[in-house]
Amino acid sequence: MLSVTTIRWTVSVSKDTDIAVRSFLAQRGMKKSDPLKFIEDAVKWRLFDRTTAKAHEKFADMAPVDLETLIGEVVDATRRAE
Image 1: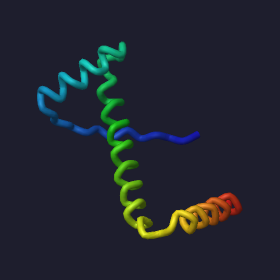
Image 2 (image 1 turned 60 degrees about the vertical axis):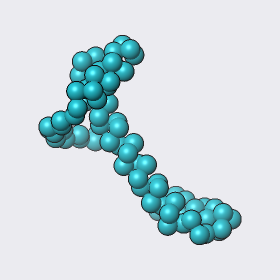
Image 3 (image 1 turned 30 degrees about the vertical axis):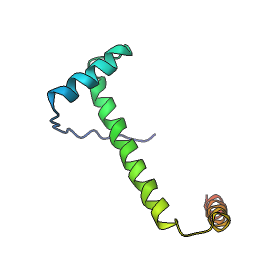
């Protein structure tokens, strides 16, 4: 089983942001502790977004067919390594 270590962050946001997030969560019936989950989810999505944007930049000049071939080769190699 994977062990998860929790690290404490101190995060400061504007009052408007705090109200917006708490209102958003309250409208969906979420609990008081859910802003923490919301922040973690937002950070993960932002990291994913920046990573994929960087990949798009790196491969922007590659022909779509060549990119599909490269992706297929990488997927096949990864599956063989498992």
